[in-house]
Image (cartoon, rainbow, N blue to C red; front, top):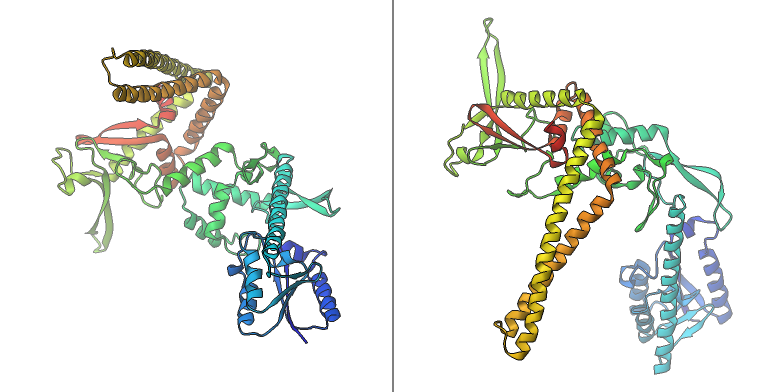
Length: 524
């Protein structure tokens, strides 16, 4: 009696969990087939949730165990329900089957017979079989992706784990198998925590680990009642679903207002912080957003010495004094120190140090005055002034770009005319030099054309400009409302958004360079 090893496989765990789990069916068919052949089954392997198209045989424990048993001659026949249970990779699976045959193992399917490798025709037929199986997997994948994309476009959740802040509610919608499926909705309790997480990240400058600790301290857990992980908070901050956009691969739905938890500008600000904090520090591309907001100083990443251009870094000196009653009081003095001067990197005639409280106080007073002034002026005039300024700037840039385009186009025409002279032997350029000049000029023409198109497009999209300016104005006013009574963390983040750099001179003379997006508002 021949000894038989059986291999059963389903591609997804969903197949295992559903009532249509076909592993029992595969077992029954293989057992009946073995009984008819007079064989004895000595071992059975079941692979659940393993894709025969995506997972290589070398990464499948069952295949590796069966190959080891084959080498040890523990069985005579490998039996499967269908050959695609062995795999669907056309560049690999035929050779896996051939390996078993070469090692004295017969390979059978309960529905498709035996696989042989005795002639070239056998090898060709085997390759065609698994090539077809691979093709079916590809077509299935394409259909699945297209189906998911269509669901997303229609505003339906594609399935999978529901992100924190949402829940599935059954409303009678049926899938193609006539099974009721849930529609995604905002979870009232969790959505408030999502808002709080974005607020901590965007307005208070919390890092992901600090957010995790804050949630744990306040007994806020994930769907499963467990502590949030680093990856779950990181993914939350990047998930466009929180602004009401469903996603499947590269397909995005339109904004679905009933699913929006986070305002667009808050979400965009979060992405800016994430990108800025991920940068490796470079002297010429310093971070604008502080990596953490725990310290007392307001402008540690923005302050520079106006005399030498070096960064002002924080230094802390412990101090102590004795009260009249004999009590010793320990304090610390925090100061901004010119890095270049302290390290003797260059000659600097500025101050060595600036008191933190005094310098931060100057910045704070400037912002108090700025916000007070902004709130006293009519909104429509500020927005219109900013719009007209940007419009004039864009028109001027377009004029310069068109001038450059004409200049480079004229130069290109002249050089192209010179080609004919070169052919006649009357050109002042040799052919190689002329060819290089034409290539360089074509690049300049192409660049000028793209700049003209960019500025023309900006002029055409005036309504979008007005909307963007309105968002920036609203953001400034929201900062003005919260700045005075906000925490140190919030003040630091507002300053990081609003200010690009602070140059400090002797005597605490400061020059503030505002972020270009807000500069026009700040100059009123």
